[in-house]
Image 1 (cartoon, rainbow, N blue to C red):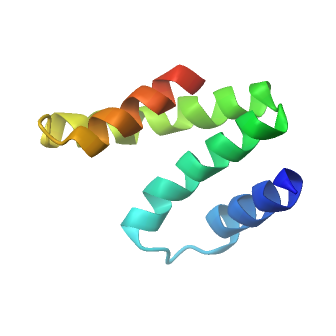
Image 2: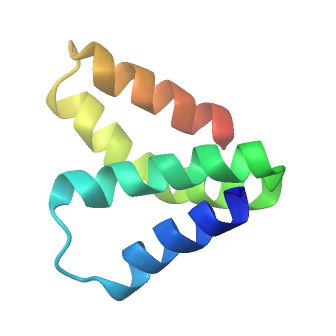
Length: 79
């Protein structure tokens, strides 16, 4: 089941150029979680590495937002 989810999220990220910014941010996060649950640690780490820049930017823009802090911690954990 996770393989289908991974394919769906990956295709949305690569095929659709006009995704809303929020979806473009959270889809890699969901991809990371699906990869971890599927046991694809290498894929999850690669996804986490790609997410670090945007997540760090969010955390710097709004350092008191607990959602971004949690999001960043999960991404860094995957890296």
